[in-house]
Image 1 (cartoon, helix red, strand yellow):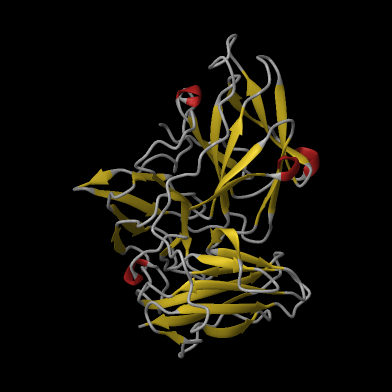
Image 2 (cartoon, rainbow, N blue to C red):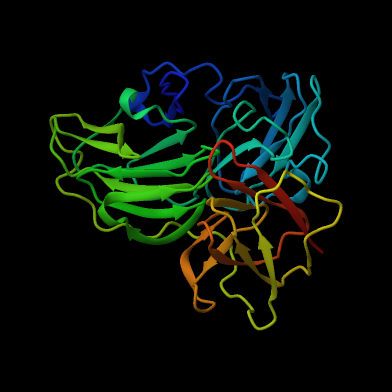
Length: 392
């Protein structure tokens, strides 16, 4: 399955698809990196996106980062429950990779799903220009889709100058769209016209499949969604995908004959990952994290220390007038209901908190080490904040 770049000037989304797009020429910097002695070589260069990394569940990822930029950097594997030493936070879990130096990232992802990599928040000023790309860990069991398409969104064009990228489909085909919102300052609302959209996974973790209302989904900064879309129109027809109301992509029906005589039945859940089935709320450690916009500061002391295996309930209190995106390293979390400790039927690693609102998340502190919690207000002028906690 080829991973191909679909440039739209500097404002681009990147599609990885199968043979239907195999004739497209990849943009420099995309595609699988070169391998040397079993290591994939990832060169960090100014202004260049990184390649899509793809491996099977249970396989070890070996990436040698070579820093060819003029500033120190490090890679954070967004959403991956990595060993702490591989989390890529300068000053907390590793030394920054200086210009001309290299660092070896080596781990086996514990979960299948859609993830991505990027500079950690401590790598100041690199969010828009540092190395970043998708990491796809495929399930060991068939997922039930005919084709796998990656949509990696880094920037969006102005509404009056939006190029539209065609995604070719055949009637009665089922697509799996892996959508990554790599926008660092904005949510990504998508609306698929004239198509039912099944949400299969959020932030790399399988969800109880549900249909998106009116074909609309919204991803916060850093969020990912795996969507199943059944192509139910006829050859020669098309349907727009809109972002913020503007044309973004188009499902373009090709081929004279349908892929199969009729559409597939409702999708079954994706194979589950090994995540906690229960939380011990009675003995939970309960804390509050204020989300005021302050300059980045990891600090010398942890926000809290949790014993390994203990349930943690964290209240994310946004007392600002700006929506905040909160990303928790090393763990997947449940979003709790407002009135009790019931939770939504999906996992997250990045949570949106509306202005003047509080959201509660719960997780089992089962990954030992020092873990960062990032917070960023939406909008280019918003500040980032970082605190950390320890699991012992």
